[in-house]
Length: 614
Ligand SMILES: O=P(O)(O)OC[C@H]1O[C@H](O)[C@H](O)[C@@H](O)[C@@H]1O
Image 1 (cartoon, rainbow, N blue to C red):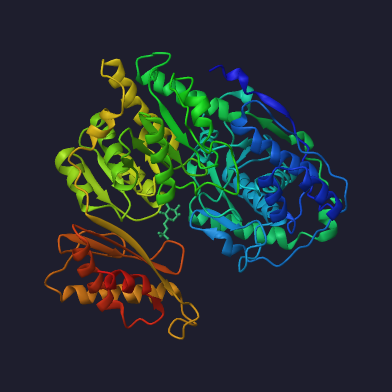
Image 2: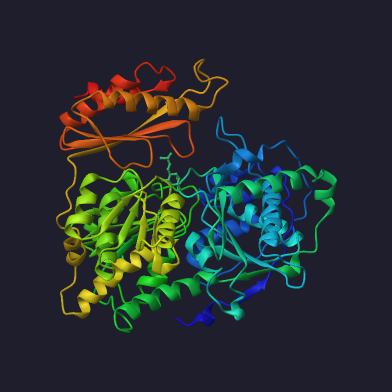
């Protein structure tokens, strides 16, 4: 694909958002299709401009940057600004920022409005200038992209103001994937103004429509927890110095430093080139394959038109490619049962060779073979491990903690690799892959059951689209070597993977208002539960603690295993059980229940129900 189809589109004027009056709202709402009208209602309390609504609807109907671009403009109505007290530290979610960006959901007050977003962007700008030791002789540049959320536009404008106000150049990519944003810090093309010094993706992954957030990148990768904390602290002091008058009056001179580029075309064309190269420079290596894509109305719809079709694949029957931040069809999440059912049905209905599904911001993916067999969670890891171990015999595969025993046997006995089961959390898994290499242990793949997977060859970037490119390479090379169509080559790669009869995850909430927790931290309480469970297991002859374990308490018994651990972010103890049968799973469940029953701030009702239903 010719890169020149992208290019710089235009300078963008980024104004502060204004609330428009109810007559205008009514007029605009009545001119909208049903979905957009619902979005407008959701937005009433947050305030946004008529032009932004125009942008929103254009984005929604003009999927995947297929050539249409729209420009923000200054709206005319009066400002309605307020600066509420915000606890910035609450916006940290591990190595991401997440918050409530749309008001109206009970119990979920808005804490990520445009002013907060502007302060966070200014905080990132300050952090980046320190990091890059910018001395003012060169303007730093930052790219901004977003997924399909209804708050995307307002946050993109606010972030642009925060960056440009700090003296940085801003390049907006519009609807984009998270991995593409990281990529823009790495690849080079001055004509398209990249590499950028930093990048911001506006996304809350698969969370409900009212949430949003940010992920940050430099060419060293995604920012970690400590950097996010630093940025939020800087943002809090910047915000403390905002004043209503200052915000009203300072339409800062940012218009010259904000531009738009169709970067997704560049990124997609690189994926196309990668598949062509792997297939021996064949122009259409997927000719004859029928592949359906389910983007769940997130940002992944580009994959059908901009990757699969140029490679020759038929994509009819693909679904939910249009961005729609209300996610009306299913949650864009390859771990979600309804989402996997939807893509499986599409594969079967269309008699397709393969199905591909992405999460909202395309850093996660899963596949479905032509028989309707799902390749997510452990099976996706087995598939990727098989592909990577063919290329790098003996390499270590790093995974999260909830992977199955059968996967270890498969990687080690069948594929001849090493399985390093580490902690939950994509950043933990990726950082561990990088660390292993730095201490001399070769690792080429770090992957989570959630569908986040990163390859060393791809800069350790967790890219759902790139994982699927590796799968496409297998299809293409099978075709090149004369095999007939279909996805048998994929199915065969996981042959021999032992799968449990039953696999469940139950999540026990810790009641933070309970007298046993009050005043203390839920983490301490959770740790106490885990310690007690560990002691109980030690005295149980039928249960054995995993000899090597990095997170929580993992125990084998009754032909299966369980893992109880603290959630990375929430006051929750997730319990995973896998066993040959329901009966065995219940025995494991009862062992857990027996150990934790006296912790009355822990809600184990889901486990009670599970063991009683046996
Ligand atoms: O610990 P949990 O609550 O199960 O959450 C764990 C998950 O948290 C986030 O969503 C991360 O992006 C995932 O990489 C991680 O797997």
